[in-house]
Image (cartoon, rainbow, N blue to C red; front, top):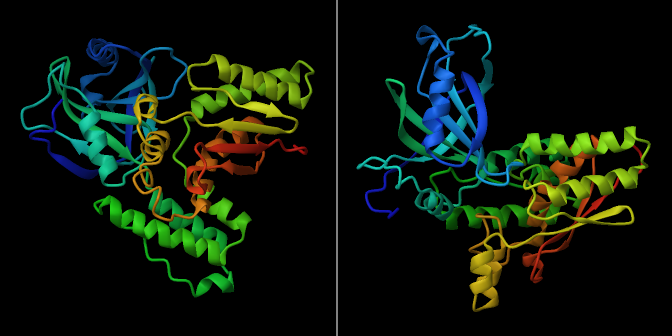
Length: 354
């Protein structure tokens, strides 16, 4: 889809209580089918808003997406045979083209490129909103769900440094708003991480930044935890249980690749974010940009950002393995593009006391 006549906006989607079901989305025609299936069970008097769809990019399905279709319903209503839950408030960067959508024209590339050019970060899902016409959902808007990195940073900074006299005199202004440009966000980020290097210990830097990582799908982490606990229940020792988790990751489509274990350390080396662009790159600068996953920094890798920032990426590993062990873990950055390496590699220390 060309970017002509694109109209983008930023807005907040309020928390909503909705009837919902999930399914493996492989073709867009399935959306109408699943919507009608859900609508048949929801009384018209209970409906309280526009239907929506969430597409999760990481799941155990070998093809397509884990999709969740929802119909907002009145508070306090229960519907026999229908799952109802609260969907949280989302901030979104959205697109509604002037000329509408067609089945061939629902392409997210323009939306995501526009979001990344503004330095916006998202979690591993996106959202669609529909207008209900009869028993058909008509696509109204596609939405890039914003992971509010700056708000998380400021929250974690205040939690970790509260009462620290050495940090009280350091002035870190609030993160630029979502509407700010990519360059403005990076300039702020570079200054903020420099302040962390000057005034915070390594442990404090890790606590602050690793909690800013975008969110790994909790359903996938729950599967790892189940594998781990099943292994322990079968009398496997801890390291054998870890090996079974890694074997599961190697087989499940939810992971691009599995890490490896070396003694009591799990080593994970990232694959390129854009494998095709990485393969076709002519220079190391182009390869680095294709390799990096982070929209905040991938266009600024040579502009002096402290490698401390990579504790944010360590948070991606932290979420998974703390979910496995139900216990805090320390993740070390072994290699990163910001250190001049050609890949990013992390070491997760297996806790000895659980």
